[in-house]
Amino acid sequence: MKKALVAIVAIVVLAVIGTGVAQWMRTSQDNPLQGAMDGQRAPGEPPAPAEPDWCPAVEFISAPGTWESSANDDPFNPQANPLSFMLSISQPLQNSYDINDVRVWTLPYTAQFKNINANHELSYDESRDEGTAKVNAELKFIHETCPSTDFILAGFSQGAVLLGDIANEIGNGHGAIPEDKVRGVALIADGRRQNGVGMNPGVDVAGIGAEIALQPVNALVQFVTPGATMRGPRDGGFGSLNDRVQEICSPGDAVCDAPLDAGNGIERAQELIAANGIHAQYASNQNVIPGTTTNQWVVDWAHNLINNHG
Image (cartoon, rainbow, N blue to C red; front, side, top):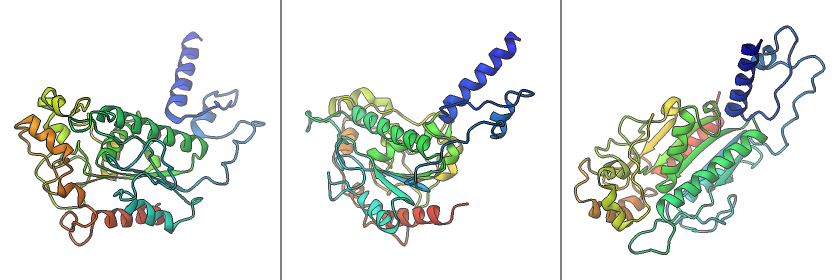
């Protein structure tokens, strides 16, 4: 009897952690776990509360890059940087759907990168940790409030790094939401990009993400960008999400196509904060995904995931 009780308690705890269920439904006397396993209510058990009317079919989460957001920005009408690259993706989607069908939510976070030219700014680690926590809170809130809602994630530069980290957690079974709630992830200029991890809809690039290339010289990087830890590759890649993650990188972009040989760590770190021209041209560069621009490709990709799912 004691072993049986321990087993039941363990299963209940795992279910609460894995699915965010607030109440554990009682089931039949013959098999106290059967109702939980097959999703059926026991006789006399009240039905689960209906979702709010505003719950969307899909939430599109947009994560802007460094200096393209602010901690207090409006997630539904971002104003921090009118030239933010991600607005060229999120605004067309907002204009195409009612918010009760597709909720477009833009991450409001500090989006800074402390360096020798901007010592007053939040460090890269602090900024992306803040952004990661806010996205996870949004995912958890919507999933618990609107369990039928699916998600599409897209981010640029620092926003791509933090969404890639979140996709890594979800795909490996310890994220804020179950992996089957994610329709797709688009990472543009991901600083932890690896060839062969995720899908590449564009041209081949020979390099790797700067955080991988610079990990061996992380101590040197700190002289230029204090508080910017080069975390290397993501353990476990994207797990079960691998085929749903699009890794988009322009050849020559020092953020996602860094040389395999780190070389001079200080010079490489300076390249990261220089906002090189290639890194700033994804909205116009047709050499990343032949025949289109990156932002237009992501908009079309998102439309397809929204309109042709299931």
